[in-house]
Length: 433
Ligand code: GKR
Ligand code: MG
Image (tube, rainbow, N blue to C red):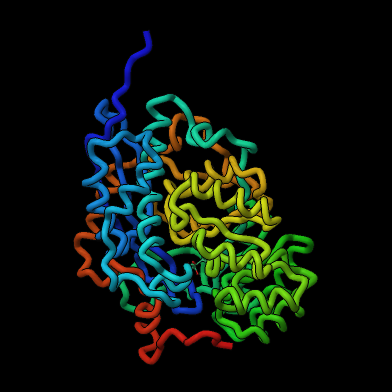
């Protein structure tokens, strides 16, 4: 006789943590020495625990708490019900804006997008618990993998050797990368350590000609390898077209050169280089305008802000219908998210670009075993659920760091981090160049 499982959620645990982050530069400033993440655990009545991970800033925590309370008593297999729960959770209006910012590098922040980023962690945790209860991997719950490994690209950043003098931080061994030679050296290390064969450079940091030179140097050092440049909307339409022209022979795609769908459409009309985005198409509502204007040729999915793994598959299906490519965006994240990204990516037939991941930059994790890259790819786990195990001691340690912080690191603020080194710094208005 088959044992009857009780999939009712009996308990939800939310653990905010601070994770070490190197001084990576972007157009807004520099990463803080520690970045907030939220670890979600969903425990069923029969004792199965599923884990999820999302942004840990205050505005996400404020939503996750009432969400967690409402989840108790529901079943982990009621995944559609998660969106109804999300609708019931009020968003403090001061946490959102109709314009660029709050989310900044992740596009316009709306109440819905905030809620979906929270839903994603609960959806992943429910899928993990459900998979464990049924003895099935998460990819099977999504319809089954179409590939055994998922390819990732090396995510290169301009970087200081260390955080500013006197700032408490963990040391890293990547060294500085502030010019073309430094970027190539960083790329070389990525290939040696992880076997990546495609490269993305985070731009919008130095004047465009310097970033063109860095991409040219990469093309010379790694001939024929797919290359991407992403200035997070820091350029005008004219600058975007100029950079696209200068790098047309080596770019796989240019990511968010200009800000907003109208500007991206103008650039796209003037260059044969495909444009990718994780800024102007970040919600279902934004798809219609962008696709009908042919503003983007590749959408970077991200299960965090698209509302989970099943929504990511829906996004991929819409892209397929419009002949738009799919790739994957990443923000600072740990192994739970990498496992979730890998499961969903393994089920998307039209994923033809290596995914982004910040994971190599994170020296810390909350898992008993880190996920590994072989030849730039992560093997898709066939173990029940996500196939990862929480390291409670590590989790407690990183939570303790969050608890003892005075609050200044509870919200990611790259601009504030930059002001420590340069008190006059303010995030430049866009377009910067
Ligand atoms: O981590 O500095 C960063 C990135 O710039 C990140 O915030 C972006 O959201 O990686 C992202 C991107 O591709 O735009
Ligand atoms: Mg991007």
